[in-house]
Length: 328
Image (tube, rainbow, N blue to C red):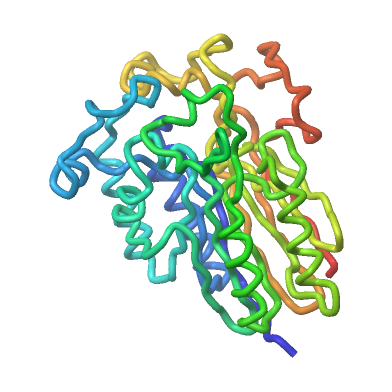
């Protein structure tokens, strides 16, 4: 019988956009400690690396980036967010998001986060955890890494995709572990608008893994800035809402804070920010996952109030992560 494991999870902080990133990270760290979490995991789109780090380690800065990328060099805030995570007293596991690939290469983001590889696995208690990297596109039979915002310049490419090499590695890793497994990723691994395009191949791998015993229990992702759960083949797929906002774009721009904040954080007006940070505390047992979510409200007009089209997702845009129990 596997012992229970408790962890804290959050997604899509976007330090390069938000004016209160430090307070949001402090909140999730405080909750993780209060609830006795054994580790903390973020599901991507945390931040671009600091300018100084890029210059010293790789000889590049944001001025070398693609012009589509966000031009918000919040170096002091990035430094403090990373310090808080590094010194929080808990293991912190990082996931690469597509925006980590705006400011350079995956290698640069991995170095900044202290990651040994873009995809990897670890154990905690009686459970196994896998972190995947779906920041790839397929064009003319080639698999290309996201880097320097190149995913914005390949209109014929299929994206995102999870390479076959990674799917095979996942199967081997889960079998080798022998423990019930939770999979983390930035993009959804199932059939959603923003999920991987080769989700059928991934689902086939899960079906093989779970054919004779229940090995993979839950897949959790960020990226879509929505809250919702679906189940395929006995596996739960959980969209974890952003800790910060939903991106609505400059067409629906709305200044929600002071003129000074708007001046210093020019992309903030292109979001519908949540007044309070959203995150979840998850307790796993062999029988269930108990998710303790958080609820807030939009700071200012909601996306609905502004006429933002929300028909692309099966889940409504809400300022919450629902508390729920998933029975395995």
